[in-house]
Length: 252
Ligand code: PGA
Image 1 (tube, rainbow, N blue to C red):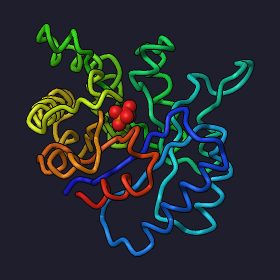
Image 2 (image 1 turned 180 degrees about the vertical axis):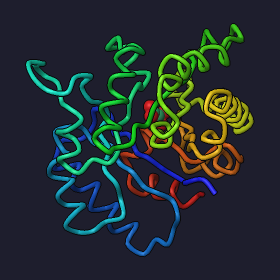
Image 3 (image 1 turned 60 degrees about the vertical axis):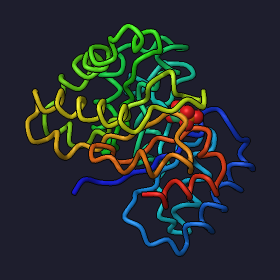
């Protein structure tokens, strides 16, 4: 049995007081929840200390993630936030390689490889995002593009390191657009990702959780999660609404 995970990526949304309200709503809505789904939230950096403290004090069953980290350990890197700083605030996960970072901040595979190592060395788990753009899918290059993203970064890890990684398949054309991959498209790519990982890492591939991301919402989550290679979701827009986010968790 693989882990089941639903992670909320808040992106650059909410002021801290709004984030505090959202976490309290999640606390209320998940209080009685009996579920084997791991729930994760990734608020902006500025919220992590306060929300991490609240989650710890209230013993909420929600884990904290960051949306990015530096590719250097520490030192003169103005504006950056290190993996160690995030771990120190209670983060258990770090999202890495989100398409918005690859696209708008020129995140490259070399830097992602360094980040993955730093995150794993701090005892946290990277949520490593892969996915193709619309023109790549239209040109029937989606498998090739995703395989390359995996090979350039994950193939350089050792099997024991890979066991700490969570993969998120996020077709770029489905992110924030309201266009979702069909459950069959998601399953097809997830099975392919598992195969590509298996080619290098053998049975480690059977254990790695692969999440789907891209306009996942309460109305489509259960259909997507019903697929055998889909182990959960990375939720953007719908994670900003506590009711919707918890509905997605419950749809597993
Ligand atoms: P979305 O974002 O759910 O708003 O499409 C998903 C993501 O980018 O993680």
